[in-house]
Image 1 (cartoon, rainbow, N blue to C red):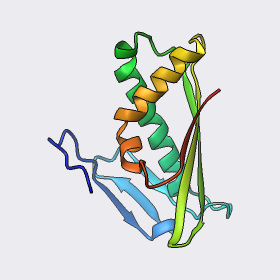
Image 2: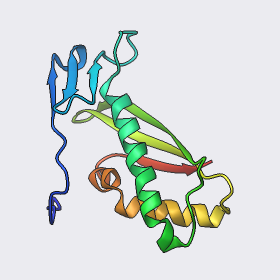
Image 3: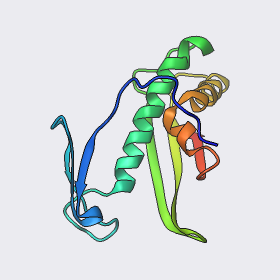
Image 4: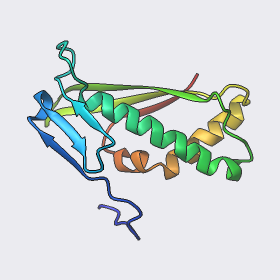
Amino acid sequence: MATALDKVLYTAKTHVTGGRDGNGRSDDGKLEVRLSPPAQGGPGTNPEQLFGIGYAACFMGAMKAVAPKVGVQVPNDAAIDSEVDLGPTSLGFGVSVRMNIKLPGLERDQAQKLVEEAHKVCPYSNATRNNIDVKLNIV
């Protein structure tokens, strides 16, 4: 069952032509990308790369939002290296995600608690939960 939004805070509007061999742009002109299929050496990016950046950025924001609740501060040099796999499934194609989260200076238990709490509130985590395999690795 889908979870309905209580209130819309923002709507991102984009336009794509040509699919994986096309172009995409946002309605505000802040984003314009050329698209190419993954692993084919084309001139553009691909949806999996965009998804990885979006999820990692969103997750970092979620960590910053829950940090006070956990009693820590997200380090200034925190980083997330995301890996998005694309492959066949019994239903067509799917993706899986690994996020390698670097939180220098935090004790392991603090970092674990921060990541767990962020995973509960991150919009991408909530959208993907029980739909795709997501691994959160503290490195």
